[in-house]
Length: 152
Ligand code: FE
Image 1: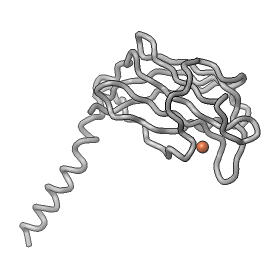
Image 2 (image 1 turned 45 degrees about the horizontal axis):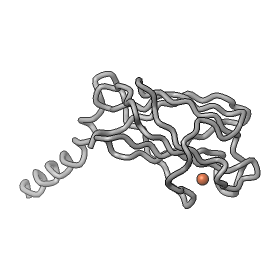
Image 3 (image 1 turned 90 degrees about the horizontal axis):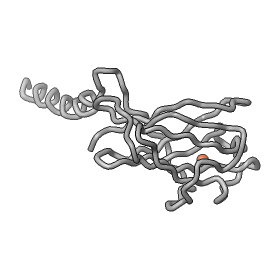
Image 4 (image 1 turned 90 degrees about the vertical axis):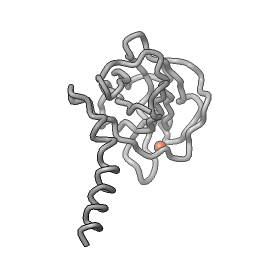
């Protein structure tokens, strides 16, 4: 019986350790993943603005030392004001020398069954891709959010 208990503990440790080991001493925690959804399209034009009224800014960071990652790629997509996905609300951005980004867009419209949200996919060499979402509150016009990536 004890063999089984020991085995269970070892298996648990194997699954728990990798994420635990990647929380940096500075307290930088990996950003939680969120649904990709059916509307992602790769290859959106490189641009920092697809509308007006909602600014999202922050930095892409590596979990190990919480350092900004220069040249990380962000791909944004969101619904237009009527709640429909369109190519006008897709963008690709690359972070600056300190890992920072700033994206300006329209407040997405509502569509059934979901709170208002923006989708983003964040990728950087040496790190696992992150797909997540931002949830603006009603009338919010500026959001600061860092995205923390886990190392490969
Ligand atoms: Fe969506």
